[in-house]
Image 1 (cartoon, rainbow, N blue to C red):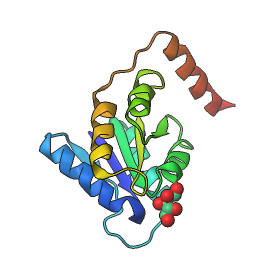
Image 2 (tube, rainbow, N blue to C red):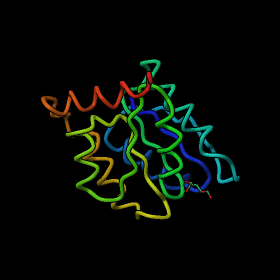
Image 3 (tube, protein in one colour):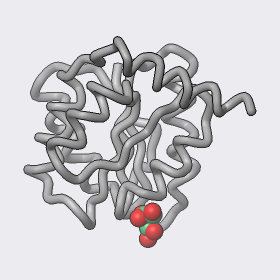
Length: 145
Ligand code: RB5
């Protein structure tokens, strides 16, 4: 199950992600927002990330204007490793090396076609583990300092 969230500036991109997930029969839960009215991204970052922390969802995709506000908010939540990506290599590498569980996308940064490629590689790339597991554990230990 994929947790989705956006603010108004990422709403249309989230709709495109939903269309893709539907076409692939990938289950998702949409934590809002639900229209283009101006709103605040941290609300939806928190809601969607809580869906991951609760175990209901495995990963998340958050959309805002840049992807940056969403990633900043999401990374404040214990257990979340969110990456704002606008290129293919980073979306792949953040799964391979960082075991990112949230992909953040900027509707004002990437076109829909590229965004869907980023979603595909993010969802289909497995964490490499090994030395990267030690490093991810070090990141997560920072939450307790
Ligand atoms: C909204 O105008 C915009 O600031 C927001 O979507 C996001 O880009 C923030 O990082």
